[in-house]
Amino acid sequence: MKLTLKKCKLCCTEIKNFSVKRGNQVILENINLHLHCGDLTAVIGPNGAGKSTLLKAILGEIHHEGSLSFTDEKDRLTRKPNIGYVPQMLDFDKTSPVTVRDLFNVTYSNVPLWLKRSRSSEEIAKEALEKVEASSLLDKKLGLLSGGELQRVMLALAITPMPDILLLDEPVSGVDHRGLKIFYDIVSGMRKKYDLTIIVISHDFEFVKKYADKVVLLDKTIKCVGKPLDVFKSEEFQELFV
Picture 1 (spheres, one colour):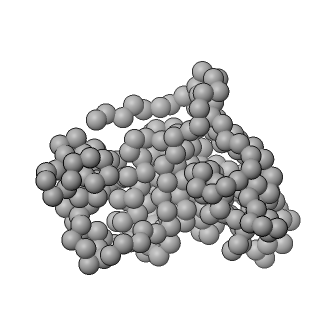
Picture 2 (cartoon, one colour):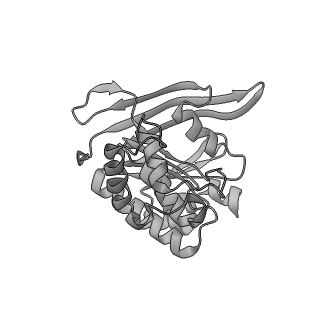
């Protein structure tokens, strides 16, 4: 299964007036963003700022007000974007004998795993893992993967098929420094090659400085948005983090 490269630089996803409330409690309020293909946007903010809630609202997993729209490379307002998602962590039984190959088979085949493996899902797995430099992990048990290896497998699943937007929710939490660098180098290369729009929640400001095109400083609403160094020098950042 071949994935078509997208290098238009023209697609745009608009998040308009996103708000989330639980009873009388405001979790997010009046979030407005324009996200262009090929850009990596880092969302930063203190604990409880609503960062993960924003991703869940984009995914449509929680009730929210506001709208999400996608404009394609021909300037047509066509549909909601296809979204890939890498969670902060994957909760599973680490004593399970399930391998990475098995995970792809159950995800991309309707045939019960105990009957036979799907040839198409095998090809999907190999191609996806190659994109995240994880081909050697195909037959490794999930419980034996390092934190960085597991996140690359989750990334491979998230980009199959290649989405319009890739959401990363603190994807390297608990990953060692080497695994962290490998993951972010892969993500950065991928957004350039496939013109991906990427939103990443991160507490790693050094990563943000190095990789992000735009930074959103969030504390229930958008406090500041701009290039990394401009946001880090802002009064709003100083008030929240210094």
